[in-house]
Image (cartoon, rainbow, N blue to C red; front, side, top):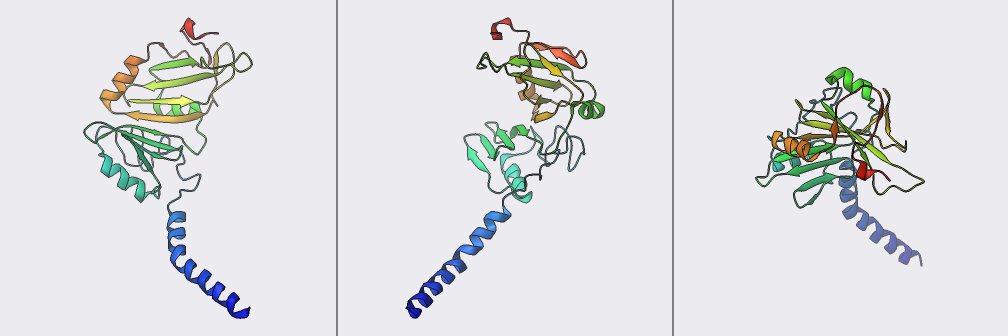
Length: 212
């Protein structure tokens, strides 16, 4: 019995010798939950909008973007079609020439609208969208702020505030999306219900067909 147990332990030990390096590599490739921080949006580290982690839409190639992800410890990325993703936090979309043309990321630190405006000024346009999949009990609104000079829009936290989105100074940013010039202009043109900035307060989806 002792020899059987000893042999069993020997096999376990040998297995660990082979498996452990892979386990350690996997652990090293997983970013801590707060690694993205503000993504440079406010801090400018390592770069600010419309650059994320030194990836510039319209300039950085797909291969360069992958190397940058690896350098920042995000080696467990996924590729599907023209999208490179890291968890639910980072997405790169590439054009037909293999150039990154859209970058999206979810900050892991809290960024309020007033801090964004203090750095970049008021947005050039806003968009409020009523989620048509909402139920009578739950009416969801989404809001985006557009910055034309930066080819950027930021998506704010989702609200259940019928009949409008209520924007306050401490409303949080859920996602920042950077575009190449061409992709930004296409996205802005496709957004047919943009309205102007009117300060903090209530914004209603201007499309009556979206209302319940």
